[in-house]
Length: 364
Image (cartoon, rainbow, N blue to C red; front, side, top):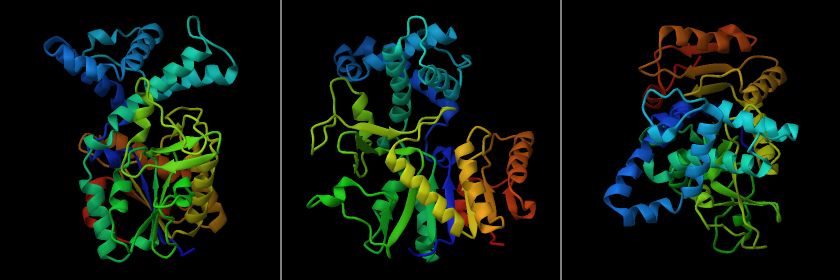
């Protein structure tokens, strides 16, 4: 495998620049959408029926969950509602599953359906047609023009397929490589495996909206440029494995304190990320605040640091117009505290992902 000199880690802030909501904004954005649907219901019942038949079960589960668990009546949505975080919502349900317990009125089946309904919110708001690709495209174009793209690997912590689409659209001299083998590679006239000499690594540690997994065949299928995961939430829709006819499952590791990493392909991606982080001379972290709860990401970075015997050059670009000086200071301290050599942490207080896209960094 060719040597990787630079790893770019893309967090939620990078996708935010393209119109994707942050995790903390997902509930608010979802229930804003419901007010739109209510207007359609009143003014155009036929259109309402065609749209809402697709998501009616998810709507009911989510509304019941917020009312029963958090005392929030989302039918009376207003901007003053203080929603719980995604980690709190999913963590509560996941811990019940881990403990083999349930809640009054919420047995294991309802817990799992509610959990999936919450994940539906993620897929719904990261639907491919809703997001821009401007900044990610500029980034790829800049790296390509400087002839550093093939020496760069991307680690994405996002489910959306913004950067996937751009890498897929590149000319024949560049091949997107997810670090895993898709069943597509074994089929005639389907997606071809990447050429090692032309490949650009994109490692999606939390899964992707354009992957589906067959639990019977134990294979994963790629659906280029398609948010196939959202189809699985639609009423009466099932994506069937072409080989065994088993209904396929989405591959999304949701934001929870108890992240389930048992999928064998996710494990392969983590192993590949472990390998390339040990190689890279520099790591650029974009749109990611390095939260305390993300110990699996910190584990990978610490393994790389200890293996190398030194801290790689770390560049952090995560500013936005609403970030306070106090937030910047706390975030910078999180990065500095974690790594051994503090002098190698280059925290750009006033640099956003968009700035990095245009200007790059001053390499130390």
